[in-house]
Length: 345
Image (cartoon, rainbow, N blue to C red; front, side, top):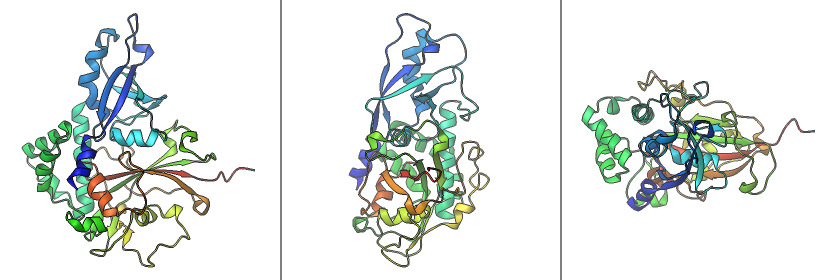
């Protein structure tokens, strides 16, 4: 099992980073920077690698780092791997991004003051996960400063062994860690899940023909925990998705008439005050499940991607959670849904 987690932690995305043409002050223009970005990392953490590379050609002024992909500003608090899975329906390698050091789009992105902002966004997400799992944030709130630093440094360094030692103090385990996982057994409890649902109206067969995401309005960003009521109950990723996205499974019964997973009432209770976070609303993190389009009977799920993997839906959900969740204890699931255009003639 550690092998699967190890692959996730070692996962990286090859980036080809171009400096925006408006910020080039020298000839010839600099060639793109080639960087391997950790999947579990965040784009602003690449600054120490990128700034020296482009520093000689930047115009005077204060640095305000941000990235775009085909003109779409990238939200810095979303893990790099999730951004890639969400925005590249057909994986692009290397992933061509544009970096900016000037003209921060504050009307579209919340401010980022470098590593410190990323760290506190991570800690606040950890508090949210603690609240969902335990009903309060005490485990995270009671961490010593040194433990917080050690935990964050393990994420920064991609050190899984160090992370396991640090995070074990938080008591945030939601699934079993023995051989029972391979047959899908779980402990009763709540699982923090973040859904990124990309809705498209255009008709297409292959993902390489899918339309590009050119606005964040096309993405529904949802915090929707799952509550597991029965110890040891077997269920698959398919069944979990039916409970996570009932909007698209209306009228389609589960294998079992009485599912053991339900949307947690706590998805209606978690607030930035509860988790000690002042950034949740600003970041657009939907603490309460937001409404989805209601043409679910004809909707078709085209893609489910987690950590760059398009898993078979029959896989035990407990294995997915144990091995594919991010370090802040959220399982990030990217879903592409084709919804018929109800306005079409």
